[in-house]
Image (cartoon, rainbow, N blue to C red; front, side, top):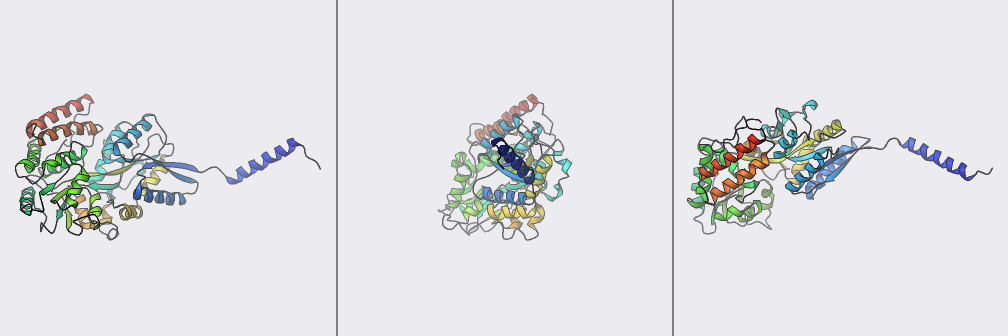
Length: 422
């Protein structure tokens, strides 16, 4: 029997349709944006593949974003301002959550009943806005005090004790610096100031969202920082141009008795091939001052759901998966990041995963102090950076500098109708 050309084409179309029907619908795609370079990217891709394997019919795609925080923030703003439906899940810096929540760009998570009691309180507080939870903590960053144990026998009891111990250590000609921290005019300077502010019992905003950065406690904290450079001379004036890496190199090269820095430095300092202080340092919370408690500036990332996502339930499933203990311990082991779940620091699962002893890490995290939770944090920080740096470079006295900052911050909050609102 002979078939015409049309008949053959019709038969082929029927066969293709049948094959498509048998194959079923195409898999749904869930997208996530986050850190995708180095060890962070490797472990995240592995975890996303694991999640997809446990959810037939769902594939997960990683949207690569710039690793620099400011560039990633700018990209997110472009996407969400344009009401883009993906990425479904967003990795946010802890200081962005309130901004994105107030803009209507991320969803409140309360409908999913997240297990917030599992997490450190400061990390959850950083993910709230107007009483609702908008982000779950993924990993925690905290400021820590590094100490040369071969030069300083014990951790300081308070800020006065820190000054004494640093000055004594500087009597060694090999230790020109008693203490080093990040003093350039950028966000890192605010985190350093925040820790001294906590030590004095002060705050940038109070519990009602009002500016209190010109308080006596704040003046005391900024005066201590300035005196450390010019009066007690335990901190070199060079720090006024330093960020994290310059600080780390000074300590790593054996030039400082104490260093304030983030956890990332710990593993690098332990490398005997590159570090002069490998095996000769320890970490502790920053010490208290008069009227306050030791503070550790809170950093890290939260996970949030794009408000324009068309699959929010699946997005929350992914977030819930990524903050489960197995994934958090894996990130701790492969990347060195501190998990935000309290129980992990007590049950032994982090003993071989973290380079920092888990009990020490938990002690530091429990001193965590969040930066102001407000949609205009970045603008407030810019104002504060200028004033703090002017005081530390002796262009202004601490009190006058903080009064200027407070005026600018109050004017900003009033202009956007956020004065007294958290």
